[in-house]
Amino acid sequence: MTEPLDIALEIDPPDPILLTELLFMQSPGGTEMIAIIIILILLACSALISGSEVAYFSLSPVQIKEVSESKVESDVKVDALLQHPERLLATILILNNLINIAIVVLSSVVVEGMVDFNVLGVFWTYFIQIGVVTFIILMAGEVLPKVYASTHNLSLARLMSTPLTGFAIVLKPLSRSLIQMGAMVKKRVKKDSEITVGHLEHAMEITKDENTRTDETRILEGIVKFGNIDVKQVMTPRVDTFALELNTDFEELLSLVVDKGFSRIPVFRESLDDVAGVLYLKDLIPFIKMRKLNWHKLVRPAYFVPESKKIDDLLNEFQESRRHLAIVVDEYGGTSGIITLEDVIEEIVGEITDEFDDDDLNYTKVDAQTYILEGKTPLVDMYRILEIEGDRFEESKGESDTLAGFIIEQAGKIPLKNERIDFEEFTFIIEAADRRKVRQVKVVMNEQVDEDE
Ligand code: ATP
Image 1 (spheres, helix red, strand yellow):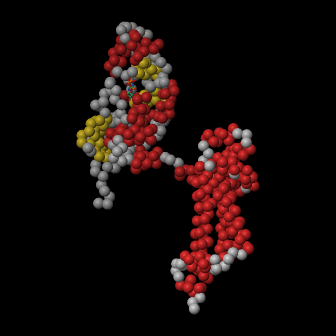
Image 2: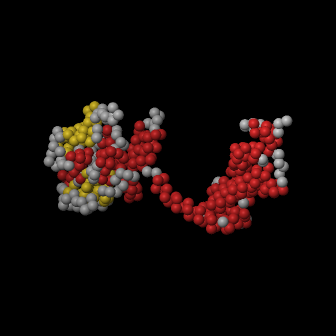
Image 3: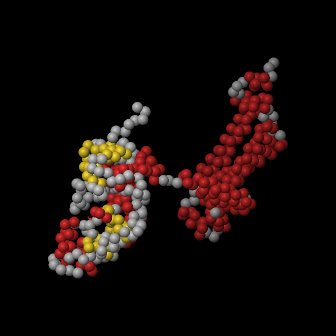
């Protein structure tokens, strides 16, 4: 007759009925019974502790307010525990892990006492010890109590307030070192987890689909880049600023103002580096019919900003001071240009053309690859016109903010008419220049050569 032991060794995997019979070949002794009772108690504790994690950290602001205003003892304790959320979490985690480890150790005592290694073989013995025990801990000690706690959070938090308060005191040394270690790690990884403008741009790039409108994309891109743009990049430069000398005759002033059509005009004393204030066109309207006027009294104080100011900060200042125009000054206090609210807003919404704007001067599109731009075109506007990412220009440029400035930097001199300057797949051909200035540039976007080909 074949021994039951031999039959079991021949079966792989074991027959479940036979396995059950074999499992209980040895009935639990006194030690195993005590261990089983302790495991059940520990499982209940594990359930309550891990349920508390969800219970405490899912309390709504209303519930938190309720316990903080209550005088009931359990509520006072809940409130006190919530005052130190990191310590509470550390206490819960330490307790839960200690209990779960105790369950694992005790269950291996039970399994070893009740199961015959020779019958089941090493694999199935470890399967019971690790797989089954982990499953029981996960279901009874983690998943089910957490599901329950999410719907009964306040009552469970109240129930656990006394034991958790006690354990928070007992485990304080341990939880404190855990918090300190956590803080150290957090400090180290923080740099990597910071969201940069590049990350946001990348996120927009990968979430873009055929349903995304181009104007939506442009506005979002504008918002993302907004905080990174400084005044110098978008201002109207000094050479293009229309300003009035303080001693200009009123009649002459009127004709100049009408001719230029700007609503706000800087007024200077000796030179544009000495700005006396800003003249508002609307302040002139009541006197428009007069021939003579001491118009200096109409000049309002000017608002000065440095070239390096970020335009998001400037927008806040414009809003707070209810101004639309600022005089941009360089590091030596000289005037570099002016910037208006429209220049700032345009960085988000794109080009704004009002009734009086001369909009046909900026650039000419010759074909899909060729554009003619003014030298003074800000680089940020060029990226928009050419529909390119400006990253490579931004990386290669020095101080320059305009196309002319970039070309001069690349060439190392002021290039002459018809000179060609290559930058990556772009060729810049100087269309018009003099000894001091690059006025007009033809930009050719050559086909990118695929390196694999
Ligand atoms: P508004 O539209 O409020 O009547 P505006 O048309 O005179 O004012 P903005 O709309 O504020 O001027 O700006 C339009 C563009 O004109 C901006 O690029 C700005 O830098 C430029 N600009 C405004 N005032 C002057 C000026 N006095 N000289 C040169 N450029 C100016």
